[in-house]
Length: 230
Image (cartoon, rainbow, N blue to C red; front, side, top):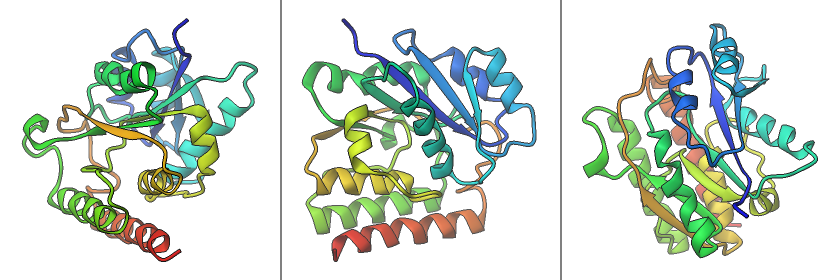
């Protein structure tokens, strides 16, 4: 029997892109959960009409939205075996979800990161701060933890029971790095799968602003140094 897969999509003002994302998610997914992170546009109605379960998280922050999705899943009678996190801006290719979950299903890997490798990235799809931030964060993880990560890509899959054991707490920009650091600390198995990446629809709320890029960088570095000296 195939594993039950749920997808959590944090979304802030993604009315132009969210339906494209939902409609291209493969049928192996049993439920798509869109968490509207205090959206002021039609993200919620568009996502609902596209077939997603829609939750509302008024507190702004990527981590807040992810935690809201996890709270919803925790109340379900039948829990999924795999959780996939995917952005709502249509920069990823949702059909590649099959490649993301295959190492978990076929090889019993605990977590899979979709790595936005250079040869599969559309020109301009990642900003200079994003590229530098990824390089710095993964280099520090390699230095301190002998990690083999090359990306902090948000398109990722993890076993549900392993996700719960991580006891995730970050409410904003540090969600992805927190997950990867805790996986390293607990010595869970992980792999990266190359994914394609294109220019997002709309403007990024993180890398598209100086404030967002600075806050994200500070949060990422603080998580790394916290775990390096703990």
